[in-house]
Amino acid sequence: MLDIATFDARAGGNVLYKALAHPLAAEALAALAGRLAGTRLALVDPEGFAPALLALAPRPFPISSVHVQDVRHVGEFVAGHKARALTDLATMGAEDILIASFDAGRLVGQLRKLLPRARIETLNAVKLPAAMLSAPRYLDRLNFATNFAFFRDADGLSTRLVSANYWAGYGAKAVRLWLRLFDAEGRVLATWEEAMPPAGFAIDSAEVRARFGLGPFTGQLFLHAIGAAGHDVVKYALDTYGVGNEASLSCTHDANAWPADRYAGIPAPQTGERVVLWLQNSHATPIPPGAVAFDRMGAEAPVPYAREVPGFASVPVDMGTLLPGLAWPAQIEMRAGRHTVRPRYEVVRAGRTRIAHPNVERSDLRPDPAILDLPPALGRGFLLPLPVLPRSRFRTLIQPTPMATTQEALPLRLDIFAADGGLAATRVLGVLPRNHDVAIDLDDVLPEGALADGGHAELLYARGIGGAADGWLHALVRAEARDGVHAAESSFGAHVFNTLMTWRDEPQSYSGPPPGLSTRLFLKLGTRVGEARAKSFALLIYPASAPWHRLSETKLQLTDGNGAVVAEAPLAIPCSGSALVVAEDVFTPAEIQAAGARGYVLVRDTTCRLFGYHGLMTADGRFSMDHMFGF
Image 1 (cartoon, rainbow, N blue to C red):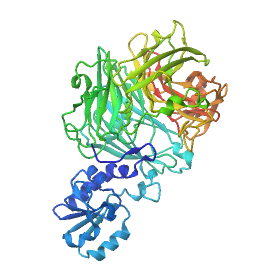
Image 2 (tube, rainbow, N blue to C red; image 1 turned 90 degrees about the vertical axis):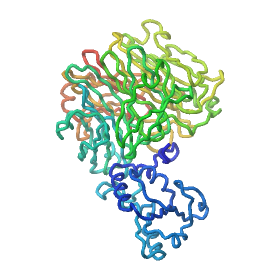
Image 3 (cartoon, rainbow, N blue to C red; image 1 turned 45 degrees about the horizontal axis):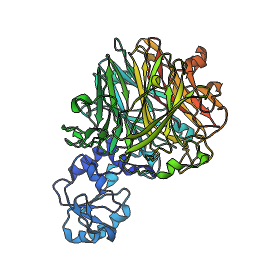
Image 4 (cartoon, one colour; image 1 turned 60 degrees about the vertical axis):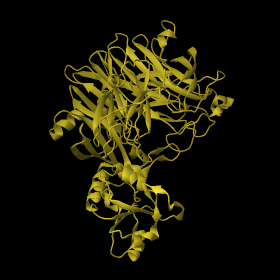
């Protein structure tokens, strides 16, 4: 387990982690360690940065002693060394001093009085160039608006990253992206910058490959938004599409931006399927053999991945080979040791591939009895909205996925709603153990003909049947074409929706305190997929934990590449209902053309919080699906 602090559910992302893990900082750390090699180095740790510094440094520092300023920490072990007092430096004979702190000018001046002949370095040596900073204070989260994307252009498959310059909506004036593309071995293929238009943008692997004269590649793309405001995470939708005779089409979304101890929700393969987990090293330091392991959820018999993974490398791990005999609907847990930002898994069936992601499995949660006894003002409490694509064409399967290490007995219920908000069916799933193999086929729950044009389901806690709840309720939803050829899947977690009353940080808001009672969702437009033109769709869901407004007051705002609204269409979704929206059918061809290649649809509502799933559909039956993101 890497000794780093990454994401805290209360405080958000750890800025120090991002500052030290940045590819440019990693290069500078290696150079700094090289300059200090062969000396007696004293490490001064006034702020507790030493463990992260040493864990993320791609080259070891020759540390002879560690010194702290706070007398309460003298004698504690810091990065394998017993911490000494800062005042001991004068008698240690250190030739060089490294202060594990940024902007430590005052301390440098104090130590020069104590040790006038020593060479003193600080973490200023690994700072990003000033031109790459968005805020004056270096360890400001906006200076590290970064993320990773799985990026591939090989074997007939290309990837396209699509998003919007949502920072402009928070006052950012001139945003640009710093990008670095790594290949499967972690080598740098290309580094470049792109100015961000005020609205939508796309980065296509085929275009990148042609631009830099690259051969086939599979790896990861690091993105850093410079000039950011409001958000410190780069959000995006990522399409995988086949070219030529390759007929794949799939969609996933942004990574989590911080490495985690564990990930869960990886499906075991069905007969005829191959499931590959893409183990992508998010750091310049190698992942040691055995540092990452995989296990059947609840088995507590992890199988280590026995090979080293170089810095920033991407390695396919075949789940069927590593865990032979394990089959759907069993689930797989990844013990990642904080080495990777949320990875991707790839399912290959009948010559087609689909990409999805597991979710962060939390180790800091404990069951909270209050969740199963929420007051009536919060109604049904936590809800996980899940799409049901038109049943005349698609089969839908729902699989609850344990997503915290303490989830041993989940009391669950499934409510299914027609598009008009009417309750079509409900089923109590019982108290599911951690190692359950339950996957609900809605064909077994709904009568024939129900939801022929689509609807949605909501997974929630069942009260009065025992078990325990912690609010971190997740599930995987899989849609399969009735012809059995193409499939897509997504996963997400539950929240409290559309109630004026609050419970802790629920209902969540895009910005500011709860309750979150508004919507701002991004829907990309259709694009060309190989030789076919794809249409963009969204299944917009109006979930309500307690009764809320009878109808939504939703606006579909077609936006062009400069951020101007080209056209607007109203939409009224019934409470607890849904609407299947096809962008190219809502707006005229002339309006779509006016929006341009960088256009998108902003789903806006100031009266309620919608949740949505989006994707592409082609005339030949291919489709993709994942949950939408908001800003």
